[in-house]
Image (cartoon, rainbow, N blue to C red; front, top):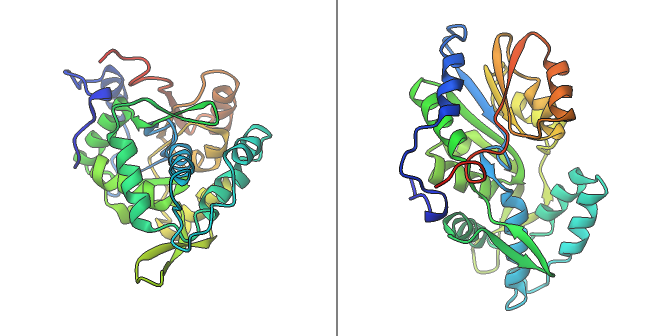
Length: 282
């Protein structure tokens, strides 16, 4: 597992939030098969690796072509932000993966590592500052302790699957094939290197697509713990088994209240919110 960059290291990694959470986990029903499923962006991470990677690719493209066929990426940062701001997030997430057609797999891996290892907190593109993500320390500790307790950990994310699996394996010590993102078929370039294809594979892990992916590629067994931050995660969060726990890293306003109504009495909603690098001094 890779070292934690200086910008989110801290001397004492003990987390009051993790301690409070595990008091609840210790009281969960004793199941032979323990499973937890997490969203990645703004849940495990403070920030969004999909945003940051796309921004980094667009900045790099100012200096050189990033596609192996030499063609420019035909999707702009402003087009992406317009889709996000108008509520078309599912389309936006899909397009920033599709537009990376012909980008080498190794370049995406290396840029993901560059971002995760960065001691800087943001990038800049078109006069806008874009956050560089880092791992939320509370969630990291929760994942580590769940692993020690025998839980199988899965990640389902709307970011590209290459970045998702680099972060899962190299920064969280998870089995990369148990973690999923927006995925395209890989093809070989004329030089024999793996590059991204241009068609996103089904099921697309956004909104209800996360549930479909879970059922098709992970398990028929309901998870005891689910974790997310967005209303687009609600369908996945609703997978939680009776008596389980839903970790909520989103706002503590109307969306949290909606989530509590959806989950009802069959599981506990555990708000974590903006903790880690934002809320805890290093």
